[in-house]
Image 1 (cartoon, rainbow, N blue to C red):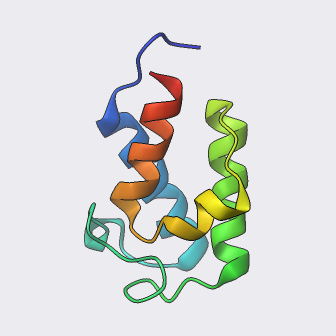
Image 2 (cartoon, one colour):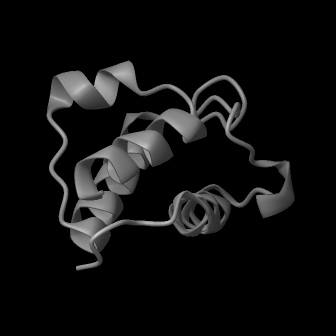
Image 3 (cartoon, helix red, strand yellow):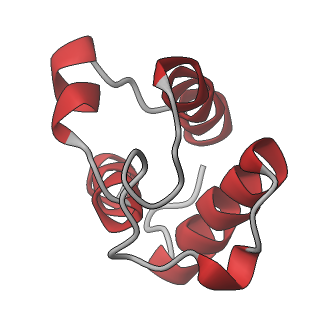
Amino acid sequence: MPVSLDRDVVFEKVRSHLADELSVDAGSISDATHFRDDLDADSLDLYELVMELEDTYGVTMSEQEAEGIVTVGQAVDFVVARVS
């Protein structure tokens, strides 16, 4: 596990996962992209993203924490803060 994590690397991983799972263009996903409003992600999609982040980076996210994360940038910042 790296001592610090490059935010851009995490962002690319999240963006790639969302593009694959939701069949959207990765180029349309930015830090400000809302999971529900912009990507039409449902609870299962978000749960799968949380599982992916936990498996990939060894972080844990409570249900309350997950509910507070509404944009791609917030998800990336959560991971970087927990790993760095």
